[in-house]
Image (cartoon, rainbow, N blue to C red):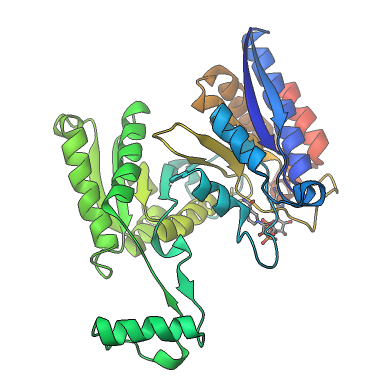
Amino acid sequence: MESLTVPYIKGDGVGPEVTSSMMRVIDAAVEKAYGGPRHIDWLEVPAGGSAFEKYGSYMPDATVDAFRKYGLGIKGPLMTPVGGGIRSLNVYLRQTLDLYVCLRPVRWFKGVESPVKHPENVDMVVFRENTEDIYAGIEWEAGTPEAEKFYGFLRDAMGVTKVRFPETSAFGVKPVSREGTERLVRAACRYALDHNRPSVTLVHKGNIMKFTEGGFKKWGYELAQREFGDAIASGKLVIKDCICDAFLQNALLKPEDYSVIATLNLNGDYVSDMLAAQVGGIGISPGANINYDSGLAIFEATHGTAPDIAGKDVVNPCSNLLSGVMLLEHIGWNEAAGLIYDALERSFAEGCATADLARLMPNGKAMGTREFTNHLIGLL
Ligand code: NAD
């Protein structure tokens, strides 16, 4: 018996509904694919609102320790605590565990309505840097002594004269390092080679932010040449770059030109959501946060807690389910993952989906979360 322990965070709001759906479909697919010898032992670990009520902490240390111990995990959406302490539980997990890649695969499922004519041409995997950039959280509010002090440093010590309205400016700092860039681009190149993907595109705004985003481009190319030179020389891997605004246009006009995308934190945030919308799948797009050096990976639904529909049996469980499928692929249980992709494809092709997707399908049949989950299990 090959069993694997997977710690999971149920999540807040719609979290318990999507988590239960995900676990039922995955258990059924694993059973169907391997008929017994493989099995997942789900280990619930506390986080979010319910953890705060019970343990007085939104993210107990024991939860973080469990992810470290088992080397992987999956989480439903978590509410963002209001008032002091942790800014965002997701950011806290990413930083504490140094999960430096936010991985977002984007593909289209036949039957899902899309705003573009050929969503089938969108098949990309985004590697978004997770720990640096303007997202590092180093900023000061306008009008505070800290903002004034920071401006004073810029003006007096650095000779900066370009701040247009210094009295009323807020300030943020954008750290981008060679190490941070290299580990991200290395992971993207390895992924491309392991998954027979033809290219890695470095997406940046180096034309304007020459040292930060320009550094990302320069260090990215250098790393690729140094560590993947043979694959590049043999034509197995193409490294290219694109300025982010041009990329956003090109990804709409000729998405087939792109495969693996490596980009900085802020660009990656915009790029991932735009691409997901392009395949009609913002509500069904999965994600993972991964440290490719330690191997630690936490898979997650990319939507929030959707408090407006929590407990109503209408939430679309696919984002969390597909993040579970990414987990299966991560551990090499590809047969079970394949069964779930097939079941989703067949379900969408016959118009069977939760209301958010079904109402946009010409042949749509809206199902509740539980009914849809049962339907998928029946299609495995
Ligand atoms: P949200 O994603 O929860 O909801 C936005 C809208 O989309 C709502 O109308 C909701 O009903 C709908 N929606 C979202 N997911 C859906 C699904 N799977 N099926 C059907 N409809 C769905 O975003 P929000 O309202 O801005 O945030 C609510 C809370 O979630 C906040 O506390 C926010 O900080 C948190 N949040 C958490 C995560 C995360 O844990 N990864 C991500 C985003 C937001």
